[in-house]
Amino acid sequence: MTTTSTISPSTQMMQMITGFWTSCCIYNAAKLDVADFLHNKALSCDQLAKSTHTDASSLYRMMRALASVGIFSENEKGEFSNTTLSETLRSDIPGSMKAMAIAQLGDHYPAWGNLLYSLKTGNTAFEKVEGMDVWKYYETHPIEGLNFMKAMTGSTNAAIQNVIPMYDFSSANTIVDIGGGNGAFLMAILGKAPQAKGIVFDEEYVVDETQKTIEEKGFSTRCSVAAGNFFEAVTEGADVYLMKHVLHDWNDVQSELILKNCAKAMHAGSKILVIEAVIPTGNTLHPGKFMDINMMAMTGGKERTQAEYSVLFAQAGLKLERIIHTNSPTLSILEVIQA
Image (tube, rainbow, N blue to C red; front, top):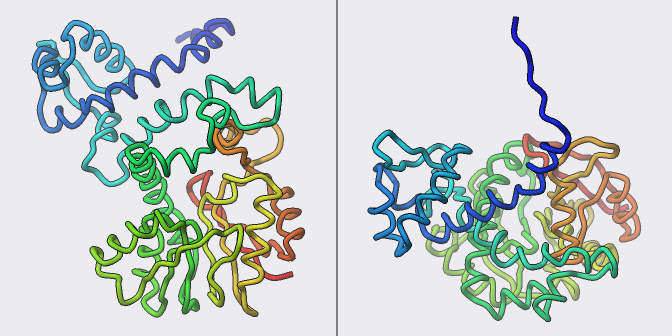
């Protein structure tokens, strides 16, 4: 006979309250490139400290804490090696979480620390802290901006794996990816839809680099870029308009304007594919519910329920045709047509 021990509510709450302790250790391990140094080898903290230019005793204390939750592993010699979890912090792997750790616990962290400002005023904590919106911040802080683009690459890899197999792009001749960043998602779609050509639509400072990536990946004959502001207009005449994790960055008024500009650009038979989390009602645990707080603090945007999306689309003269859920709870496909 076995007995199941229970954790008291106060202990559970303490674990939740101090969850950021783990996050901050992950951030510092990422900043110090620890997972890169431990690739295919075990090192003592003395060796790691020389590579990371840190104090060996202090570094050991952090590594010991992370190893206790499965991030790195310590052997009987006191050497540390990577685990399946810490491997995700390596710089050189597809879908690396290193840039995301640095962005979330670096650029984003002060806004979360000032979340009370958003709750009291309805305004964006990031703007209160930095004196500018997050997009201007990344435009004027190129190192942080480049890291954030790398962080979004991890999100794009998840979309490539979860979204593309769930949707048939074979009837599309022209696909425009609105806010398409480095073009990786669109090029992956073009790889599965050889009849189609694509356009990455984003701001000028973004697409200048995207053009280089398109050429490097060998898609220059099938994929191009267009610089613009989706609050003013988007490229006309496409069969499919993609918007992956775009609308959640903006409030309802701003999102409606983006959608209206898409509606103006569409031809009969065009579709918009909005790729976002769809928030369930009730007490269901869903990662989008906390991503929604991130949007509140960082951008002034929001995650939405199916009902909220239906209203938003209708206000823009559009109609939600169907929702295709994928294996990722933050990557549902909302297929939208003209009303």
